Length: 438
Image (cartoon, rainbow, N blue to C red; front, side, top):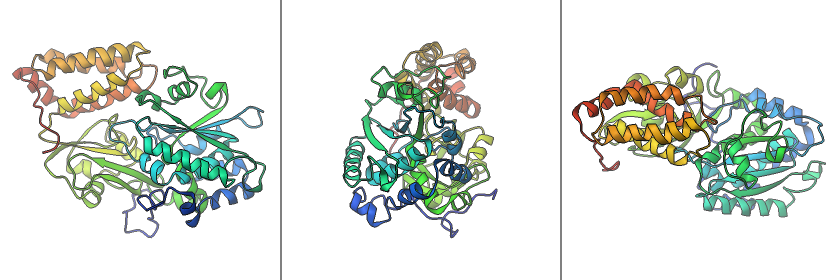
């Protein structure tokens, strides 16, 4: 189907990843088993080959939920077969982008769902060892993951010869130290190996030479958890939800001045209007802009046309932004867009590893300095033009996407809100700094 499903009004709409979030004891193995836990992995390992699992995930249309949106089954198919090497599976749980907080509740409330998803993914890519790289600030999540892994291992759901088959798989939790750069897959692997978290040159890609030089696949928490209901109910069930290019359910997050901020599990293609007004209860004050997919995605004006945009990869791209992680951030009218972008630029400058010149000098140097000049009332019109001219000198030229992530929101703000930049420069006044919350 090409149009989005209206969530809550279609019989196929049913929460799966968040079905048990918030329930007492949902993080324990006994709770998970009472609700059908590990039955899908048990059946699949006995009835399907690894290649059949990959094909099922391909048919489902599942795309990576970490932001890039790369087809999951296709990514798995890049792993070599019968090469005799150790294969690794890594779960990227370094959820560090402002506006993104969906994975946290899977890790804290339904860790066994992630573990079962990793068993299935490990079987598909012929990996016998998996790592969950957890954001350093997610202490409760890491604690519950480690406890869940101990429970699963004690009952025989991890370890040797799972469910009476010849497939063996074990998991380990690795706690990060709070670095955003570790969300980039090669920097994450360096960190796992005990090295400085700098990104690696690609190629070779992880499927050829990843963790410790061995074939490796890296997926996001939501992506791996989604594998369980897909293989439980079938690819057709998943693919019938969403849009032509964006299939299935998605965890959408919303933050800012809205009545009910939080995470909502809805079909792909749900409109921004529906998320903001029907689910999140509507804004608490006048809104001028929204960021649709986490802080690295270009902001859009808060207009009727934008509100009617389906939240899918293709529709948001057509509007000049991106779905990203699905983290919607509302920016009220009383907050200067220049100040909001200055704040994001400082974040990316702080999180830059400093390895490459475009990011080290372009983002952490020139971009920060130009924003400081404009934002403190010392700017001139040429500084706005210089900022605009600087962005294409950074975008697409850095070692990893972190510099692009810094450029995209600023680029979008200049496209739609350049008048605010120019007004500050012409009037020689600093940005107003109201509290974000009244």
